Image: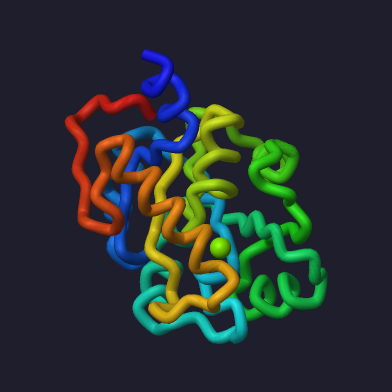
Length: 182
Ligand SMILES: [Mg+2]
């Protein structure tokens, strides 16, 4: 029982290999109107400001139907501004996920309610935890770079093991039953 309660804080509602895989129709069917996005390793690699083409295509389709907002933990205003301008998506830096303040800020900016928001990111301990704490839908995606920097490898392995602990297979397509708690 204790494990289940703890697990809820770290359980994404969906797991996908990339943003580009996420079904916009399904999000709309869930009543989602705003998509909050992590930046580093979700929209573009941490060491680049170039968004891969499949993600660009997905973003363009998403922008026609949803309000988009970048919620980045990166402390560099310049870094977030460059990507934000390139994609024409507003955003904030220094969001301090897993704190909820960045999500609350985005929610206010977009004028939407919690049940209308999803946050998509590549980190369990920041993106998913922040979403769960804020009471919004959480989608975990595989980081864009396949090769991780040495320093973050331990954290990645921990996160993959946590996913397995709570019954997820890391980065395999996951389709929970309709009406899953979102
Ligand atoms: Mg990230």
